[in-house]
Image (cartoon, rainbow, N blue to C red; front, side):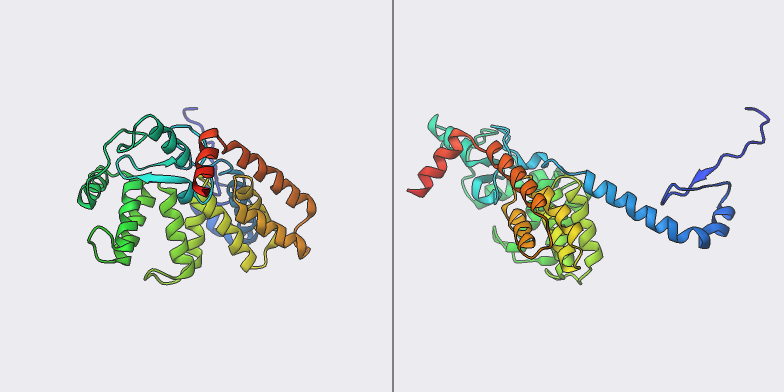
Length: 285
């Protein structure tokens, strides 16, 4: 109210446990509050980390049949540079049945006639600041395709830009580079973990799995199982196998393994379709 002497208190932005009347008041209380603040801030971070990302990101779903793509995704889908979409093998087969042999099943763009044309499509989408295109261009620089020399530093730059624009795939790649200290960057496990955490909370299965492995390295078995359960329930056989291995060593419970197994089986069942089953059968012949 006008003329009121009431002081508006502000929360501690880290833990939200206490309120302060001023910055000076907060500084005076800092030493006494530091331990409780740090503990609560870590709890809040964990609540967010483990409660988010239980669904796979949109990029993990085929844009045609709208089903999640099985792992490893590169074996069960084809990446299309024309629209930067992963189209599952089942839908590629269905498109071929109706005569779409030389066009993208999703956007219907004709197949690129050569590498230069394919690269030109990527560059066009990169110029439009499409994060997945920028991430893909980073992959091209890393592997030295389309006539480019291998350039790890340029790949890291492009992945960083793509990550800033929201690419979970770029966050995953950066996490691996920094955590392991590869691809020309100095090892920074804290930065690597942060990249994986950002991607995991957006649903990235690979990042969630590697967070579990990182916790295993630090002998934090309970935290590791929590991560691995999330990724197993989204269809990661690798994560399920890790939980099974922990069970045999007495580091995970039977209930946890059964929970992961049931979730994994449900996820696998949801990824099936007649066209996908047919292409698997044809590829085995």
